[in-house]
Length: 587
Ligand code: BG6
Image (cartoon, rainbow, N blue to C red; front, side, top):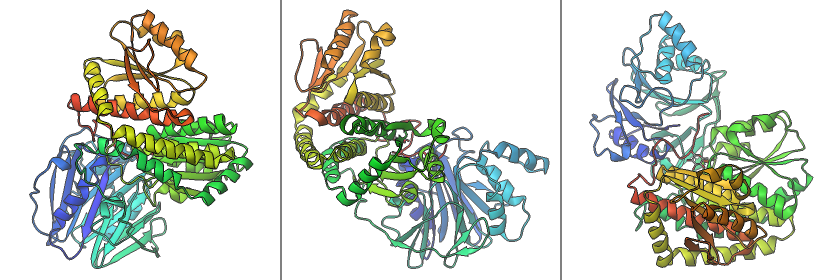
């Protein structure tokens, strides 16, 4: 997925307006960037590989209309030719895209037969040639008809020098339009419009917006004009500077207890409505991708363990097997930071078509997932800029704990537990000794290639989240093992200087985990114990507060901090790890 930002208005510094908007979007892709500026009916393009946040100055003339793009490469390698925007043959218009044209090879073949030439390997240039091939004086019509031939989830924006307009269309990847008096904007998210627009609109699928002398909306399927209602920009939660912190990751980890407090203030009335729906449902599913996938599984674990509801957790991209059995008596709950992850949106769209009730839990207001939902919950965790999700994961599983306890009629007990968790978390995070200990462990693990993480019961999904964090942040091979499975395969990899992190909680699994620990030590592997009390069979020990049923929620914090200090030690780009991006809006 990529980031798109556009401006048309009274300012002649359009390229720099788009430049700063794009800088707020590079969490969506940082393989290459590009800006097209239109002045006197002529388009000038500045583009290159790399992060736009590393670019000091543009080389573009003044003008009042521009469109820009940050790329996460999907079709075509990372190189300047494949960077967006892509020009029409006569340079009268240029296109940026966020998505994947699943039928681009077929379209390209027929365009080549018609004599069209291609400079890049991208599916985007196929869209450009397709628009040209319509040979229709009315460019908006050519764009609309071409867009309807694209398969897959795509959002595109076209800057048109002949008619001095920007035309943008959505089917899948997010598209927001914004205004501030006579200034008009488009973007891939609301956050990047803060400081620019006063009002905004989220476009729905198959809707088009045209920025010309004013801003107009159209239905792509019919070409008919449609009315849309602007909402005031909510800029309360858009503080995005790092303050005293060296990286967003550590800043966001340090905000964990605030996120727990926000979950304590979850709208009780809405929560009780969801509890009613859970009790009436035939099957309850949780679905998420990446870190949100682990959160979904932890929520399902809590509902099973605490409320005896046989909840099923699904991974967004692999939920297809359940599509046939989805029924109108079911409920599906989707945690997501962005609310725009396309794997999960596809599951929700199919579930909705089968009458399944939908609840979503998102951090970004107005997202597609929220709009598909019967029950809309928000974390209010504030912006999470680091591509590795940390505080939002903690908010997600804290909410899962609150939900399960409420289904079990223990709402007040859950609030007490989460308040206790929040205050002990704040105390731990503000204790420099704890950070010192983890930094020291990072120096021990610095040279190792493989790290294993063991967890059981409430800690297994936490072990998996630790694995994701270590892989994302350190580029090392990390492997989460259900404690009981160790002796069935992974133990073959255990030998001297192989480190295994073991997550423990004061529950019935301590004996099982100690068996696993001793099996590892027998093969001379090293143990890093994370628990409320030290044990003789730990080679390294990270202490945790005494937390009972919420200890697993806390146990992810030492894993997030270890990832952070290791990534810093390894000199990796902590906030923008290679090859991934904050939310994946392509399949
Ligand atoms: C990945 C992010 O791209 O998408 C992960 O790197 C995230 O951090 C996953 O968990 C799912 O995203 P979301 O927005 O649905 O939580």
